[in-house]
Image 1 (tube, rainbow, N blue to C red):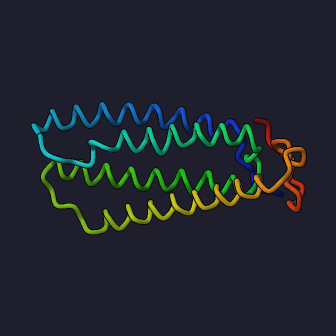
Image 2: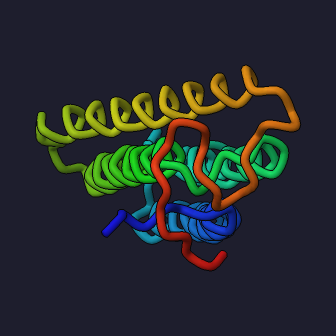
Length: 163
């Protein structure tokens, strides 16, 4: 039994989800700081930027690259997708924890920046996987690029899932 591969629609859904969470996080920042009469610097101020840039815009770019180079449906793309999403979730989650603790004037445990660093490592692994896959596709002549859902040359056959 083969693992379920991530399809092209996953990039669209990810971009859409990050757009919504990015906008909501900006609203949360404004209301949470106002509710607590906080006027200083906090990481809550940049969570929406990270979600919109790394998440929404990042996945819209991946979606366009996928439509051109047929990246999805492969093991490399699936691994990129999950590492990158996990990296965003961990990084932004720790920014939220750090930001809320700052607004509430609580001490930030030393583990928070350490876990955020792990999130950045996951993001980096995801980006490396994306660039490896893109590099492979750029080496293939345009007529030899696989159709979405078909295996790449040298990749074993697998069951496809509907888009």
